[in-house]
Image (cartoon, rainbow, N blue to C red; front, side):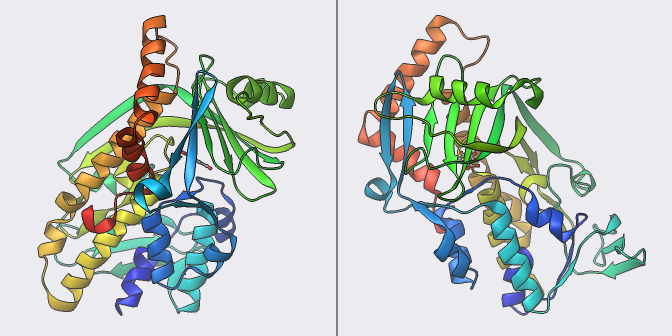
Amino acid sequence: MLSHLLHLEGIESVVLESRTRDEVEGTIRAGVLEQNTVDLMVDTGLGDRLKREGLVHTGVELRFDGHGRRIDFEELTGRAVTVYPQHEVLKDLIERRLLDGGDVRFGVTDVAVAGHTTDAPTVSFVDSDGTPHVLAADLVAGCDGSRTGTRSLVDPRSDMFRQYPFAWFGILAEAPQTSEELIYARHDRGFALCSTRTTDVQRHYLQVDPDDSVDNWSDARIWDELHTRVDGDGAKVKEGSIFSKSILQFRSFVCEPMQQGRLFLAGDSAHTVPPTGAKGMNLAIADVWVLAKAMTRFVQGGDGSLLDAYTATVMPRVWRAQHFSWWMSTMLHTDPASTQFDRQRQVAELDVVTGSVAGRTLIAENYTGIPFENR
Ligand code: DHB
């Protein structure tokens, strides 16, 4: 996205990707796009397939104590989210960069940034055919995910972590949609989420122990557990044939600053959120929206003030997303160390939040995403 936004301003970039194009385009990740992400894709010419194939969701259901409460995004905020998987976004971006003559290298190895505290940083790497290269750059973006190599170059910096006593077991199934909207269910046995990918493929998650293994989960056990945690009050999980099982770990992480000299971190190289609320990719896109504008100002006019302010500009949104993801996670999951008091307090919290317009609006505003201009 950063490369695409820079291209629209006439600025050249080279994208270095360690995985193959097939791996990038085939890895299942999150699936919910905030309104900001949808608007940015549409406004920059990436909206055709998204508009055709994306499923617009104008609300979600939170279930607890056997009942469902709907959060109506449209009525509360005038905004919505779109279910369109992250790897489909990547396919659209890659296709567009290549059509526009962009330089995207897949399968590169030995990427190393040097001289980022000078005016002439370089990036060395080995191409997929084994040819070594050294690029001279004006600016370098570290968009290399949570297993980043670039973060360690930002020194000194502070790293802030939080661990959680749970993980998600995720499945993909060929099945009808359980409901028209996503269901987030809190249950004493643990959280469950019914999401979707297309009308025929569903994505569901169950809270499990972080040390659990997919081998412990037969198809029958998965459906039983989904029924126990979700069914009731008219809702019933619709079964089908499961074709993918995986475990996702939970972690919150922020590093600060997100820059040094000519190097700027964006997305998971600088921060990670737990999945509840689906903020990860949306936050990365919000980072590069700010970064593209700052880089453009610098490259076109020699004015580095927006670049200097990059960390300070993005941090409020980063922390709001951290708060929302932490809050949704802790409000909806069952902490194995919780007492009866904690569990009843948690149900009361869900009742308070979903039982008033103010509470529902708070969820709706954050879920659909704070508009870029308001950070
Ligand atoms: C999905 C993931 C999320 O983290 C979430 O909050 C909602 C949906 C998904 O993968 O569909």
